[in-house]
Length: 109
Image (cartoon, rainbow, N blue to C red):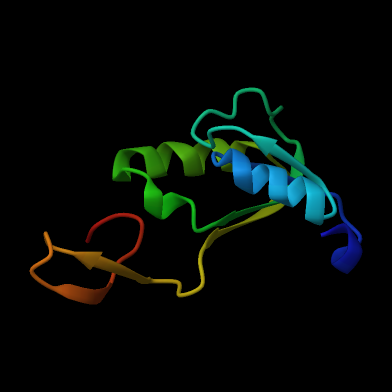
């Protein structure tokens, strides 16, 4: 983020190997932490929050809690983006019987 946009970033990941790789090969600070528990990050800390391909790994109940917590980390007027490469589309299976791509947001309709 610093090289491209002139901003400081903080990356958080639950996979230690990913954090180690990012700290070695990227500009910025990357922390090993469970993104479901961000009490250690002060409120009103960030101008922007980006959650890339993280929420889809959580239970629906956890998704809402994490989004609310991340929004609380924004400074007043801050922006948030939650998504991944194909916003609105997630691949799922029904026990191996089929493999379909369906429209699916964070909360079932």
